[in-house]
Length: 385
Ligand SMILES: Cc1ncc(COP(=O)(O)O)c(C=O)c1O
Image: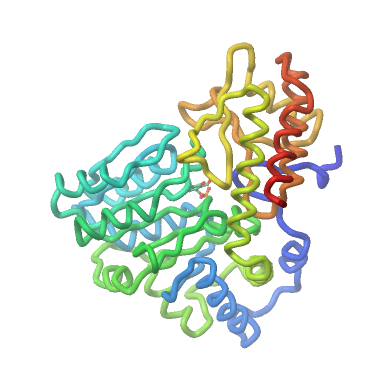
């Protein structure tokens, strides 16, 4: 199998469009030059479009977790009371970060495979007065759940003065999150998901209220001092040497996203989700997440009696060159996940389902060849009408 002909169907890193790849390979430039300043200012505009905000968005060199840590480092001091919504591995990461910065965490757990109900957020805020920050996950990649951020934001605004901080690392650009319109204070994202870039950049967008809170915060920080990034960003600069190559790539990727249009991009992700879900159902495999919470950027499929999901992933990769993800933590060996985010098309879903069908047979599980592909094709045809 040619390495470059493989199909990377995992929830990040995701395939990189050739134009973005080419941009990343341009000759290096001085990061303190008019040339870099032009790019830095141009990507700020593009990022405002993707984050659907008029506020400032800063770019960090680091993976998504760097942006999560930056948000916590700038908003949580020892003793800061924070409500953390935990329904998977990435909710847990917020909790670990809050604990690392000695915040006082109130944990609201919700079941794996479901989203958190906004009423429960309202109840938790009422039961624990003095919460200053709420940490939520838009798209919980470990379970393939899309949370109701609009509902959560409403509950937070109605019931408290707390800031709402959302991890949108695997959702931004693939599912709506108009942060200003919904009243979300901080949104963090990463480059290697729906933004179609290699890993290595992350982003923090913050409301005016959140920027003020960060400026006043007594929390110790240096590399992650977000107000410093904001100040430098206003001049088209970064406080420290940025990943210049990924800035070239980011400018190109943002142009592609703007060219397609955000709404059209959301529709494409929903279509890919519906195709994959229809295909999996037709193969008689259980979907791990019900319709209500189904993520548009990845789908989790539960294992069944007689199917070793790890064996399936292995043959789908080695025999057909389609790379799928397994489960994380307590879901290891119990689910497999199909990524459909970023640079992916409806036809890619047909390829992935075709490989899953073949892989099921090769893994010794009797599934009807063509049934999943056909169901996905029907969804696509219906959508085109
Ligand atoms: C929802 C979510 N949050 C956080 C992360 C962590 O991002 P990174 O691995 O880029 O640090 C990921 C990565 O998969 C994610 O999907």
